[in-house]
Image (cartoon, helix red, strand yellow):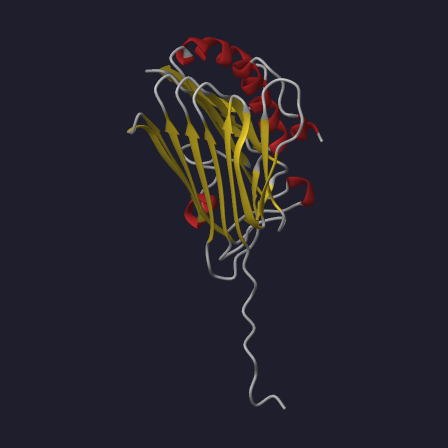
Amino acid sequence: MFDNPVRSDLQRVRGRATVGLSSKGLKTLHQSGSAKALLPRVQGTPEVVFLNTAGGVTGGDDLSYALALAPDTEALATTQTAERIYRSTGDTGSVTVKLEVGARSVLSWVPQETIVFDGAALTRRTEVDLAPFAAFLMSEMIVLGRQAMGETVRFSNVRDARVIRRDGQVIYRDTQRIHDDVLADGDNPALLDGARALGLIGFFAEAAPLHTDALRAILAHHPVRSGVSGWDGRVMIRLLAEDAFQLRRAVVACVEMLRGAPMPRVWQM
């Protein structure tokens, strides 16, 4: 009865969520598969909340999120919860984020943290296109395992790339790699320096460098290692922390100062 086994391929997650906003409200909304977009009713700046109903990403999954702002529009986009990158059986998961910010528009992209589990494999690419006089604020956090559960990440292959263009010209490009060699030498000050959580904040606007000193003052009160640089219409912050809680508090403090407003309600749930 076992002479002709039937092969059963693992089910892979697929999903696309696309949102278009103008100053008058929703222009377009498309969602399919496991990728969804919510537009909660809020006072003030409109919010878009992306979510993955599968509950996480593993090898072979393919998810895409997109948001476009028409000229003279302000919005904040985030994720409903932390994204979990689970152990892969061999394939690499893929997440693509595409953001378009129209002329004189303001977009804050502040997803919640990405938790990388042991054996995870992920390629994530974030592409941002800014029109003239658009402003863009982003934050990203990567956490290596759940410290409270005693988890240790020894093996992974994570590639997190982002490119930002203004008026078609690349103004920022960055790629983070977290692989076995980095994890094996994780105490190296040139690599993770013993950190379990990594953060990146970027603010792209004409007056962005003016916030450099204020951001340094804020971070001086948080138990994180950080570097803040402001130049040429941007301010960039890199952070290392011992755990997700410390990183999250530091990121919230910086983002709230730059926005002049509290984090979205979904962050507080």
